[in-house]
Image (tube, rainbow, N blue to C red; front, side):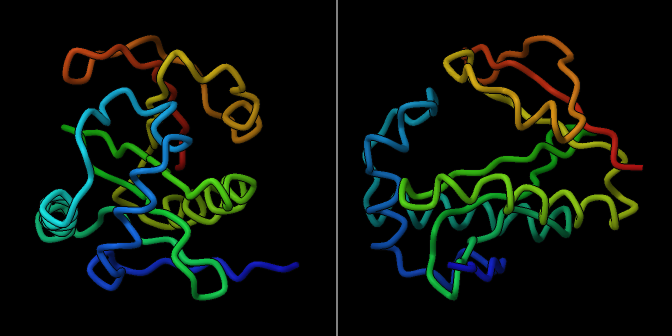
Length: 157
């Protein structure tokens, strides 16, 4: 089945869809910073924080849709002088990660504000072949809120 991948803004998604997505234990496996219960208050804060990135930087995380249905969120968030890419999919959409990432990276390549993209992955992620195929190079480890992540960088220009 062909999936039409599109990006939308997070406020267009029903909060209960995000709650169900982010409450799935299969999603939390590789998200060490996910240490709280998702409820309407958490979604409201999350969406507001992501919309603030759009206001401040002109870019942020999108809701990701496949054939018009919400399947997760992801995109670019400015961290200091770097644009970090993240992707959090519903388990039913895990197989679409490479296609979604390729579409997002094509966006980054076309955007002169983004000379490179960083990726932060927890050390629990062992299958890093997709990053290598993209051309991302390991640059070491970094700390985020007391959690160590593996850091990769992909030149886009």
